[in-house]
Image (cartoon, rainbow, N blue to C red):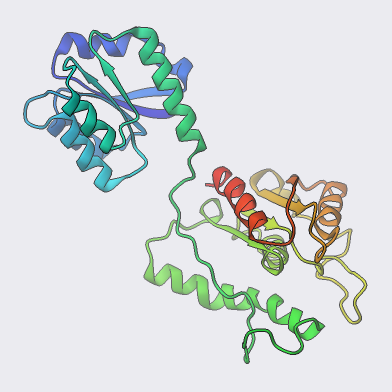
Length: 306
Protein backbone atom coordinates (compact mmCIF):
# COMPACT_ATOMS: atom_id res chain seq x y z
CA UNK A 1 0.00 0.00 0.00
CA UNK A 2 1.42 3.37 -1.01
CA UNK A 3 1.68 6.21 1.49
CA UNK A 4 0.13 9.65 1.04
CA UNK A 5 0.62 13.04 2.70
CA UNK A 6 -2.03 15.78 2.45
CA UNK A 7 -0.88 19.38 2.93
CA UNK A 8 -3.47 22.16 3.27
CA UNK A 9 -3.50 25.23 5.52
CA UNK A 10 -7.31 25.35 5.84
CA UNK A 11 -8.41 22.73 8.39
CA UNK A 12 -11.87 22.15 6.91
CA UNK A 13 -10.43 21.50 3.44
CA UNK A 14 -7.69 19.32 4.92
CA UNK A 15 -10.23 17.12 6.72
CA UNK A 16 -12.52 17.18 3.70
CA UNK A 17 -9.83 15.78 1.40
CA UNK A 18 -9.07 13.09 3.97
CA UNK A 19 -12.72 12.04 4.26
CA UNK A 20 -14.15 12.30 0.74
CA UNK A 21 -12.29 9.26 -0.63
CA UNK A 22 -11.97 5.61 0.26
CA UNK A 23 -8.18 5.71 0.23
CA UNK A 24 -7.74 2.04 1.05
CA UNK A 25 -9.71 1.00 -2.04
CA UNK A 26 -7.18 2.97 -4.11
CA UNK A 27 -4.29 1.10 -2.52
CA UNK A 28 -3.36 4.20 -0.53
CA UNK A 29 -2.85 5.09 3.12
CA UNK A 30 -2.87 8.67 4.41
CA UNK A 31 -0.03 8.76 6.93
CA UNK A 32 0.52 12.54 7.28
CA UNK A 33 -1.73 15.62 7.36
CA UNK A 34 0.14 18.92 7.50
CA UNK A 35 -0.91 22.58 7.56
CA UNK A 36 2.07 24.10 5.75
CA UNK A 37 5.22 23.18 3.88
CA UNK A 38 7.52 23.38 6.91
CA UNK A 39 5.41 20.96 8.91
CA UNK A 40 5.02 18.72 5.87
CA UNK A 41 8.77 18.55 5.24
CA UNK A 42 9.42 17.60 8.87
CA UNK A 43 6.84 14.82 8.63
CA UNK A 44 8.22 13.57 5.32
CA UNK A 45 11.76 13.39 6.72
CA UNK A 46 10.53 11.21 9.59
CA UNK A 47 8.46 8.95 7.34
CA UNK A 48 8.68 9.46 3.53
CA UNK A 49 5.60 8.96 1.37
CA UNK A 50 4.98 8.05 -2.27
CA UNK A 51 2.41 10.77 -3.08
CA UNK A 52 2.01 14.32 -1.79
CA UNK A 53 -1.33 16.10 -2.30
CA UNK A 54 -0.63 19.73 -1.50
CA UNK A 55 -2.06 23.21 -1.75
CA UNK A 56 0.17 25.81 -3.40
CA UNK A 57 -0.57 28.95 -1.37
CA UNK A 58 0.35 28.32 2.29
CA UNK A 59 2.20 30.23 5.03
CA UNK A 60 5.84 29.53 5.93
CA UNK A 61 6.54 27.39 2.84
CA UNK A 62 4.30 27.07 -0.22
CA UNK A 63 3.55 23.86 -2.10
CA UNK A 64 6.03 24.41 -4.91
CA UNK A 65 8.90 25.08 -2.51
CA UNK A 66 7.92 21.92 -0.60
CA UNK A 67 8.04 20.05 -3.90
CA UNK A 68 11.54 21.35 -4.67
CA UNK A 69 12.91 20.38 -1.26
CA UNK A 70 11.43 16.87 -1.29
CA UNK A 71 12.56 16.26 -4.88
CA UNK A 72 16.10 17.15 -3.82
CA UNK A 73 15.94 14.17 -1.46
CA UNK A 74 13.80 11.73 -3.44
CA UNK A 75 13.04 12.19 -7.14
CA UNK A 76 10.38 9.48 -7.37
CA UNK A 77 7.86 11.17 -5.05
CA UNK A 78 4.76 12.15 -7.01
CA UNK A 79 2.89 15.42 -6.43
CA UNK A 80 -0.72 16.48 -7.01
CA UNK A 81 -1.07 20.25 -6.66
CA UNK A 82 -4.30 21.83 -5.39
CA UNK A 83 -4.93 25.55 -5.81
CA UNK A 84 -7.61 28.18 -5.95
CA UNK A 85 -5.40 30.23 -8.24
CA UNK A 86 -6.20 29.80 -11.92
CA UNK A 87 -2.99 31.53 -12.91
CA UNK A 88 -0.66 30.56 -15.71
CA UNK A 89 2.51 31.21 -13.73
CA UNK A 90 1.58 28.63 -11.10
CA UNK A 91 0.66 26.07 -13.74
CA UNK A 92 3.84 26.75 -15.72
CA UNK A 93 6.06 26.32 -12.67
CA UNK A 94 4.21 23.18 -11.62
CA UNK A 95 4.74 21.66 -15.07
CA UNK A 96 8.43 22.62 -15.02
CA UNK A 97 8.81 20.81 -11.70
CA UNK A 98 7.11 17.72 -13.17
CA UNK A 99 4.04 17.85 -10.96
CA UNK A 100 1.93 14.77 -11.57
CA UNK A 101 -1.38 16.67 -11.73
CA UNK A 102 -2.82 20.12 -11.15
CA UNK A 103 -6.36 20.51 -9.69
CA UNK A 104 -8.31 23.74 -9.17
CA UNK A 105 -10.44 24.29 -6.09
CA UNK A 106 -13.20 23.58 -5.29
CA UNK A 107 -11.98 19.99 -5.49
CA UNK A 108 -14.03 17.57 -7.53
CA UNK A 109 -14.09 14.18 -5.78
CA UNK A 110 -14.17 12.14 -8.99
CA UNK A 111 -11.35 14.15 -10.56
CA UNK A 112 -9.14 13.73 -7.49
CA UNK A 113 -9.82 10.00 -7.42
CA UNK A 114 -9.05 9.70 -11.14
CA UNK A 115 -5.77 11.53 -10.80
CA UNK A 116 -4.76 9.47 -7.77
CA UNK A 117 -5.43 6.26 -9.71
CA UNK A 118 -3.29 7.51 -12.60
CA UNK A 119 -0.50 8.43 -10.18
CA UNK A 120 -0.58 4.98 -8.57
CA UNK A 121 -0.36 3.37 -12.01
CA UNK A 122 2.68 5.48 -12.89
CA UNK A 123 4.35 4.62 -9.59
CA UNK A 124 3.74 0.92 -10.26
CA UNK A 125 5.56 1.29 -13.58
CA UNK A 126 8.63 2.87 -11.99
CA UNK A 127 11.65 0.82 -11.01
CA UNK A 128 12.94 1.09 -7.47
CA UNK A 129 16.04 3.16 -6.82
CA UNK A 130 19.07 0.93 -7.14
CA UNK A 131 22.82 0.87 -7.66
CA UNK A 132 23.66 -0.87 -10.94
CA UNK A 133 27.14 -2.38 -11.29
CA UNK A 134 28.27 -3.44 -14.77
CA UNK A 135 31.54 -5.37 -14.41
CA UNK A 136 33.58 -7.32 -16.92
CA UNK A 137 32.43 -10.86 -16.14
CA UNK A 138 35.39 -12.46 -17.91
CA UNK A 139 37.71 -13.09 -14.96
CA UNK A 140 40.94 -13.92 -16.75
CA UNK A 141 44.59 -13.00 -16.15
CA UNK A 142 45.18 -11.88 -19.76
CA UNK A 143 41.83 -10.24 -20.41
CA UNK A 144 42.43 -8.63 -23.78
CA UNK A 145 39.55 -7.97 -26.15
CA UNK A 146 38.64 -10.68 -28.70
CA UNK A 147 41.27 -13.29 -27.75
CA UNK A 148 42.20 -15.94 -30.28
CA UNK A 149 40.64 -18.70 -28.16
CA UNK A 150 37.32 -17.00 -27.45
CA UNK A 151 35.30 -20.01 -28.62
CA UNK A 152 37.15 -22.54 -26.47
CA UNK A 153 36.15 -24.16 -23.20
CA UNK A 154 39.08 -22.42 -21.48
CA UNK A 155 37.67 -19.06 -22.50
CA UNK A 156 34.19 -19.98 -21.27
CA UNK A 157 35.67 -21.05 -17.94
CA UNK A 158 37.09 -17.55 -17.53
CA UNK A 159 33.49 -16.31 -17.45
CA UNK A 160 32.54 -19.04 -14.97
CA UNK A 161 35.43 -17.88 -12.77
CA UNK A 162 33.63 -14.56 -12.28
CA UNK A 163 31.72 -16.13 -9.40
CA UNK A 164 34.94 -15.91 -7.38
CA UNK A 165 35.68 -12.37 -8.51
CA UNK A 166 32.16 -11.37 -7.51
CA UNK A 167 32.09 -13.16 -4.19
CA UNK A 168 35.54 -12.28 -2.89
CA UNK A 169 36.35 -8.95 -4.56
CA UNK A 170 33.48 -7.02 -6.11
CA UNK A 171 30.76 -7.48 -3.49
CA UNK A 172 33.08 -6.76 -0.53
CA UNK A 173 34.31 -3.66 -2.36
CA UNK A 174 30.74 -2.45 -2.93
CA UNK A 175 29.87 -3.02 0.71
CA UNK A 176 32.95 -1.08 1.84
CA UNK A 177 32.55 1.90 -0.50
CA UNK A 178 28.83 2.38 -1.26
CA UNK A 179 25.63 2.75 0.81
CA UNK A 180 24.13 -0.51 -0.40
CA UNK A 181 21.07 -2.27 1.01
CA UNK A 182 22.22 -5.75 1.99
CA UNK A 183 20.41 -9.11 2.02
CA UNK A 184 19.07 -11.27 -0.81
CA UNK A 185 15.83 -9.26 -0.95
CA UNK A 186 17.95 -6.26 -2.00
CA UNK A 187 20.38 -8.06 -4.32
CA UNK A 188 19.89 -9.00 -7.98
CA UNK A 189 22.07 -10.39 -10.77
CA UNK A 190 21.33 -10.14 -14.48
CA UNK A 191 23.09 -10.23 -17.82
CA UNK A 192 22.97 -10.64 -21.59
CA UNK A 193 24.45 -13.60 -23.48
CA UNK A 194 27.45 -14.91 -21.48
CA UNK A 195 26.37 -12.55 -18.75
CA UNK A 196 22.98 -14.25 -18.79
CA UNK A 197 24.65 -17.66 -18.58
CA UNK A 198 26.67 -16.50 -15.56
CA UNK A 199 23.62 -14.91 -13.94
CA UNK A 200 21.81 -18.25 -13.98
CA UNK A 201 24.92 -20.08 -12.76
CA UNK A 202 25.74 -17.63 -9.98
CA UNK A 203 22.13 -17.00 -8.96
CA UNK A 204 21.34 -20.70 -8.56
CA UNK A 205 24.71 -21.42 -6.92
CA UNK A 206 24.38 -18.54 -4.43
CA UNK A 207 20.64 -18.49 -3.63
CA UNK A 208 21.35 -17.15 -0.15
CA UNK A 209 22.81 -14.01 -1.77
CA UNK A 210 20.51 -13.27 -4.74
CA UNK A 211 16.76 -12.86 -4.56
CA UNK A 212 16.45 -11.91 -8.25
CA UNK A 213 17.99 -13.53 -11.35
CA UNK A 214 17.68 -12.12 -14.88
CA UNK A 215 19.00 -13.89 -17.99
CA UNK A 216 18.53 -12.12 -21.32
CA UNK A 217 19.29 -14.42 -24.26
CA UNK A 218 21.59 -16.49 -22.00
CA UNK A 219 24.39 -18.28 -23.81
CA UNK A 220 24.97 -22.01 -24.10
CA UNK A 221 26.77 -23.97 -21.40
CA UNK A 222 24.42 -23.79 -18.45
CA UNK A 223 23.37 -27.28 -19.56
CA UNK A 224 25.53 -29.79 -21.46
CA UNK A 225 25.70 -29.07 -25.18
CA UNK A 226 27.54 -30.20 -28.26
CA UNK A 227 30.97 -28.71 -27.58
CA UNK A 228 34.04 -30.82 -26.87
CA UNK A 229 35.04 -30.76 -23.22
CA UNK A 230 32.12 -28.67 -21.98
CA UNK A 231 29.87 -30.77 -19.76
CA UNK A 232 27.68 -27.85 -18.72
CA UNK A 233 27.38 -26.09 -15.38
CA UNK A 234 24.28 -28.10 -14.46
CA UNK A 235 22.41 -31.14 -15.70
CA UNK A 236 18.73 -31.10 -16.60
CA UNK A 237 18.02 -32.57 -13.16
CA UNK A 238 20.18 -30.17 -11.14
CA UNK A 239 19.14 -26.91 -12.85
CA UNK A 240 16.88 -25.69 -10.08
CA UNK A 241 16.68 -23.69 -6.88
CA UNK A 242 16.76 -25.37 -3.46
CA UNK A 243 13.15 -25.85 -2.38
CA UNK A 244 13.40 -23.32 0.46
CA UNK A 245 14.09 -20.52 -2.05
CA UNK A 246 11.39 -21.35 -4.60
CA UNK A 247 8.82 -18.91 -3.25
CA UNK A 248 11.38 -16.21 -2.43
CA UNK A 249 13.24 -15.79 -5.72
CA UNK A 250 12.26 -14.02 -8.92
CA UNK A 251 13.81 -15.48 -12.10
CA UNK A 252 13.27 -14.00 -15.58
CA UNK A 253 14.57 -15.48 -18.85
CA UNK A 254 13.96 -14.00 -22.29
CA UNK A 255 14.76 -15.49 -25.70
CA UNK A 256 15.20 -13.70 -29.01
CA UNK A 257 13.21 -15.27 -31.84
CA UNK A 258 15.96 -14.20 -34.27
CA UNK A 259 18.87 -15.10 -32.00
CA UNK A 260 21.04 -17.63 -33.83
CA UNK A 261 24.22 -17.52 -31.65
CA UNK A 262 22.51 -18.99 -28.57
CA UNK A 263 19.75 -20.81 -30.45
CA UNK A 264 17.33 -22.65 -28.17
CA UNK A 265 19.53 -22.46 -25.07
CA UNK A 266 17.14 -20.08 -23.24
CA UNK A 267 14.19 -22.34 -24.10
CA UNK A 268 16.09 -25.37 -22.82
CA UNK A 269 16.79 -23.62 -19.52
CA UNK A 270 13.13 -22.67 -19.26
CA UNK A 271 12.05 -26.26 -19.89
CA UNK A 272 14.49 -27.66 -17.31
CA UNK A 273 13.42 -25.17 -14.63
CA UNK A 274 9.77 -25.98 -15.37
CA UNK A 275 10.41 -29.72 -15.11
CA UNK A 276 12.20 -29.25 -11.82
CA UNK A 277 9.46 -27.09 -10.29
CA UNK A 278 11.45 -23.84 -10.05
CA UNK A 279 9.07 -20.88 -10.55
CA UNK A 280 10.23 -18.36 -13.14
CA UNK A 281 9.09 -16.01 -15.91
CA UNK A 282 9.93 -16.76 -19.54
CA UNK A 283 9.07 -14.85 -22.70
CA UNK A 284 10.31 -14.26 -26.24
CA UNK A 285 11.26 -11.02 -27.98
CA UNK A 286 11.42 -10.37 -31.72
CA UNK A 287 15.14 -9.55 -31.73
CA UNK A 288 18.44 -11.08 -32.69
CA UNK A 289 21.45 -11.45 -30.41
CA UNK A 290 21.90 -7.78 -29.61
CA UNK A 291 21.32 -5.03 -27.09
CA UNK A 292 17.70 -4.55 -28.11
CA UNK A 293 17.01 -7.78 -26.24
CA UNK A 294 19.14 -6.57 -23.34
CA UNK A 295 17.18 -3.32 -23.15
CA UNK A 296 13.83 -5.12 -23.26
CA UNK A 297 14.85 -7.75 -20.73
CA UNK A 298 16.47 -5.31 -18.33
CA UNK A 299 13.41 -3.03 -18.46
CA UNK A 300 11.03 -5.84 -17.55
CA UNK A 301 13.41 -7.19 -14.93
CA UNK A 302 14.03 -3.83 -13.23
CA UNK A 303 10.31 -3.10 -12.99
CA UNK A 304 9.74 -6.25 -10.95
CA UNK A 305 12.68 -6.39 -8.56
CA UNK A 306 13.12 -4.95 -5.06
